Length: 291
Image (cartoon, rainbow, N blue to C red; front, side, top):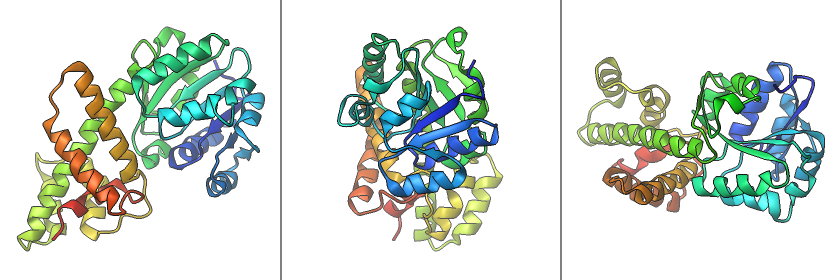
């Protein structure tokens, strides 16, 4: 069990990292952290995070560290690149990795860190930064439940925890979940695009879709953004989902699964990222269907 008196480190203080930090601070934990982006550090400092000068300083102060980065490559660069965080990790340290990355990478990295007495576990969070901040996220964990002596900590920033036995498995389930999230948004965008071309009031069409068997939570979280055409501030960026879609396709190819709709989704979302929509909320997928 992770004691509340122990500081929790967070490396990566973007939307998700700050949402987790707020949950931990509200629960009485002390939180220290670092991000290469000074703006992210400033925003986290305002919430009460003790900002440290670099990742190694976080490793020296905290035995339990959450990573909230974008890719597996970011994790490897953090650990064994210029920042060399692995050199400062304490024996017996626990790293909870919230990255949605390539499952094989976390398998390899977990084995590498285990040789130095460090445990790496993928704790993928299903839900946007807003959902995480409200404590409604699901935690998809690449570990056995009986080994999760950190469960009390994960419960602070997730409403339910699902364990899948081994490193990498949490990532694989997250990709399956993200496929559904992404295609729910895509279907909604396509329907509203058809309605807009036909001259209907989009607010009224969204009301109809939400009222019946067509309902999905995307209609609550993304529908109003699509109707208004306002995609800021983002709670999850379009470019981040573009990365996830390509990981989904890679995973599907490895296991021989057919994903033709996700193939089409990748083409649409990649075009939008090239056109400059990547930093906007992922509801901006609607721009692929607008007149």
